[in-house]
Image: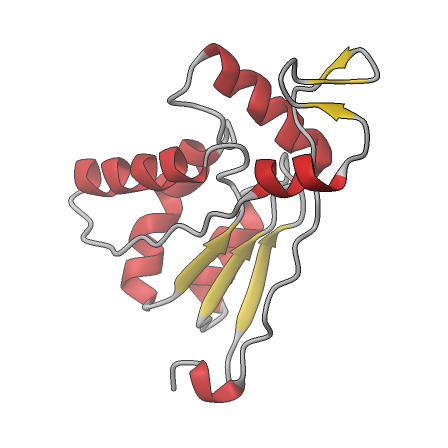
Length: 155
């Protein structure tokens, strides 16, 4: 049996449920679902001002108490807190873990979001970054993913 707990359901969700799930839930995976179209747009605006940002602004506050618990309990974290800059979010998590003396492995999943969006939205003027004269800060398109088969899960 694989035990999965959801410790956040939106960007500003409370931290306590995630901590409690890790402490008492005997989890294999903890999920922090913190992303929506609005949060991607806000992340993109932050990244435009500072290219090293663009991830969820609560990332550090969430990771500090969770990283040691994840390591202690042998659980894995799945999150979309990378928002508009998943690479920077992964780097930040590695930096925090090093500061805390916690050895972890971090994997970052990226996609071709901007390319997909430019191909899907009719009327986008790619050279000027506008749609119908309005400046585009962020656009979101769902990209299908492959379903994991049980044989690919860790036992």
